Length: 416
Ligand SMILES: *[C@@H]1O[C@H](CO)[C@@H](O)[C@H](O)[C@H]1NC(C)=O
Ligand SMILES: *[C@@H]1O[C@H](CO)[C@@H](O)[C@H](O)[C@H]1NC(C)=O
Ligand SMILES: *[C@@H]1O[C@H](CO)[C@@H](O)[C@H](O)[C@H]1NC(C)=O
Image: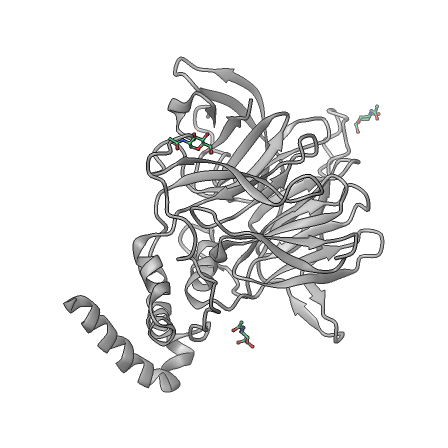
């Protein structure tokens, strides 16, 4: 255990020096305690034999874009797939372009399709992650940098080249004491079918920075900081289009990520990534205004979530499995784990550990009169061979569309 001892000694020396060096070494502060019964190390182990999400399952297809000669690719890091009220498919890419995929064709390779990608609009200076159309054709979207925004694609007149404007709806939220708090990482979004209210998440309190060389926003680093530090500042927010008010419904998620409303708008599902947890915020009924943990036995960390209005089942993205070293770090005695995590927070951005290759999603029952909450099926590509780092799931007409911050294609899993 020589490397471990060395590591512990370095960690202790640095811990003693922290008070003097912290503003430089720890811009986001030291690690916090992880409450008992929480942490990425809890939960079932990965089943390496279950390869139900590989191409060989016969259920997965991948849609790539047909790139015209000399054109810049558009399908880059499509975090989540979005459908408009007419069933047209869109993605939001890492250059803030809203892109539609049409004319999907088969290729000579089985399960590999191609589509024509067209830029519909440019969404601004930030990094849009997820969106949802309302009935009138307005796309509400979360942007890591800008907050909550909207663009209304209601113009069907092809000969009118008028570009619809992007409206930033809010980049802050009013707290109970009347003060305002910035939204530092708007992440996932859904719209209540009954009220038209917008439910969205603010993943953590760490802002993203732009990489000066590539011009891209580094949105992975804030999640890495939260995964090590555990400030649990992830929040579930609500925006009311009729008044413009925005309020906090729940807080305390360790990277507050996926958001999904059920078909009756009785509740909102909200995921806490590093806790591997799905929570349920009750909008109506006896428990209205309360949030409860409903599921936590996922084989990896959890990301986006979506509920089917037809079947009532919901789907949870599992971007990555927990690596052995990550599991080890959190199973150490509290004080040592905290020291080691503080040490990791001092490492330069590029030296922070990367996630383990894995692709997966789960089908869940979120709990109703007929059945308690439960994980029904887990589909996975255990080493991310065919699909890796699934961040968004969108159920549409019996298929689950899989987005990813890392991929240049979208995955489509047929449930039937
Ligand atoms: C479509 O847009 C063109 C150009 O702005 C305009 O002349 C035409 O009247 C519009 N057509 C309809 C049906 O609104
Ligand atoms: C998160 O950070 C804030 C500011 O440093 C602190 O007040 C709060 O107690 C932290 N939360 C947890 C759960 O440690
Ligand atoms: C993998 O998971 C799927 C979905 O839960 C299940 O149907 C299948 O039987 C599992 N396969 C193995 C090999 O465990």
